[in-house]
Image (spheres, rainbow, N blue to C red):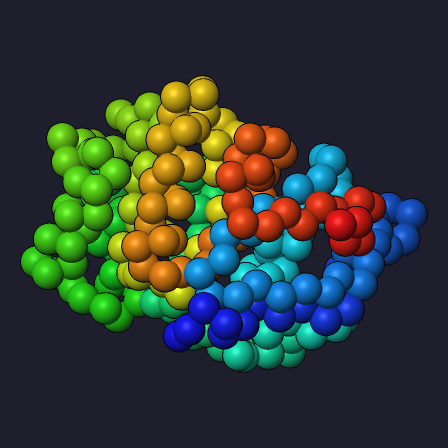
Length: 228
C-alpha cells in the first residue's frame, strides 16, 4: 500500500436515528477521503457528529445513506459477519472508554486481538502481545486485570491491542479524553509512533486543540456537516 492509496472514502454519507419526536439527523451528507499514512483529526463541538462519523466509518453503525468504502470495500448493505470480516486484522480501534475485557489480564486482552484476527494463537500470540505491551511501557503489568490498572495504563493496553495486528487503519475516539495531561501525551505519542512505524493511517476524534494541531490534517464538523 502506497502513500497515495485511499483507505477510507465517504460520499454523501448520512445517519439518522429514531427519536421521540421523529428521526434525528446526525450526519448530513459527509464527503471525504483518508489516504494511507495520513494522520487526521476529526474535531467539532459536542453533538456535532464526530463519534457517529467514526462509528459509520468503521461499520459499527450502519449509514442511513451514501457510500462508505473501507479499504476498497463498500460497507453499506453488509451484514455483521461481513463487516467483521472487512475489519479483521486490518482495522484497529481505540475507544475512549477502553472497552477492555474485565476478566482478562492485559496480556490476554492483547493476545485475543491476534487470535480473533486469525493472525496467531497460543504461545505465539502471547509472545507478540507481550512485545506490544513492552512497547507501550507495560511489561511489568502483563498479568494485571483492567481493574488493577490506572486509566492511562488501560488506554495503553487498548493502544497495544489495536496496533498489535499491524492494521492498515487505526481509529481512536477521544483517546486522551479520560486521561490527565501526562498520560494523554504518552498515549498520543504511542498512537503516532505506531501509525508511522507501520505506515498506517490514523483517524483521531478529539476535542483537544493541541492533539488536533499535531495531526497532518484537521476535519471540523458542525451540525453533522464538514465545516472545513
